[in-house]
Every structure is written in structure tokens, then in C-alpha cells.
Length: 251
Image (cartoon, rainbow, N blue to C red; front, side, top):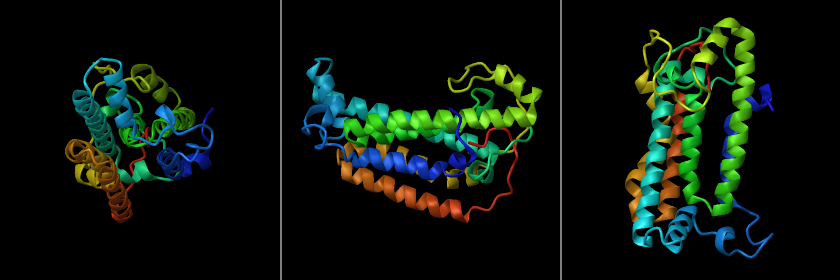
């Protein structure tokens, strides 16, 4: 169930491949007629029409409701990604190999052990609203399995390297569901906010897309904005120079 070191090295490429397949959804029209859940309408439209069809709210209210939820999930993803990256340092986050140093209980790591993976899942969940429904289901299932494999592999590596220190941290901080009242005292850390924001421009772009562009109800415009954010984020990550911080949660 644990991810291998090769999977960890290729994690960005694998995540991207899963997302691209979700948008493409090549199985639509091949396995079944493209109607209903198996159609190429966006999940956003499908959810809104489903809420309307069930009589829970009118379509004119359901669409803004789904968009608001999407923007909230995207915002949570951006916050977790930027906050976690600021505490670890972007170079540690982007390092191709698993890292293990001193256990850190600063920033989001006092509340949850894997804020970056949780933030990534939230970002992908928001993007899934623009995918066909079957593509969204495919993406969320596969991305959840892959992220869990990465977490288990990384925690096994860190536990082997740090031993008792990580065991104590693991008992005090939940893996994925944040604890509202942290048990560990805050450790000293100097967040690198500017570098973190620069390295997480994709998550910022996804949030901006849903918060400001979604009200045009133009899925193509939103998708283009996300693609631009992705391209800019790749350039920004390539330009970032940062000495790695060998901490316990480089995800």
C-alpha cells in the first residue's frame, strides 16, 4: 500500500496525469451512451441540476451554491498549501527524495500531520467540478488512493529515521483530519511566506478562478485560467532558490 521512492520522485507527474485523465475522460461514449452522469457536462452543472431535480433548491440557487462550496474548498487548499510550504520551505516541499530531520510542530503541522497533501486534495476536488462527472469520480478516487500511498510511504520512512520522536508526534497529531486544539507546543519557525506563495501559484490560481471567474459560468475560461496558473507555477518553482529544511513532513 505504501508508495515507492520512484512514485515519490514522480509524484507531481502522476498527480498531473490523473487530473488530465479526469478532464479528458476518454471512456465517455465508449462504455455507455453519453447521457446523465456519463455525459460531458461539467460536474458543477450536473450537481446543480441534480439538486434542482431532487427539489432541494432551484437551479438558479443551486449553481451559485455549488460554486461557493467549490471556492471554499479551493481556499482551504490554498491556505494549507501556502501555510505548510512557508513552514517547511519550498525546496523541502519540492525535493525529489523523502526528507527526515527534526520533528516540527509549527504552523499547520500542530493540527494535522499532512497539511500539504490535504491541501492538494482540496485543490483537486475544486478542479474536479470542471470535469465531467465520471472524470471527477475517477480523479478523486485515484488521487485519494495515491496520496494515501504517499503518506504511508513517507511516514514509514520518517518513522524509521526519527524513531521515538516521530512516534510521539504521530500520537499527538492526526494524519488527515485536523485537530482543532493542538496538543503540542508551538516550535520556533520562521515562515517563508513570499517563497511559499510563489511556489504555490497553482493553488492560488484555482482559488482565484472559483472566487472571481466562476460567476461568468464559462467553464472554458475557468479551465484556461487554471492552465495559465499551472504554467506560471512551473516557472516560479524553477526560479525559486531555497536551502532545504530537513523537516519531518516534506509533502
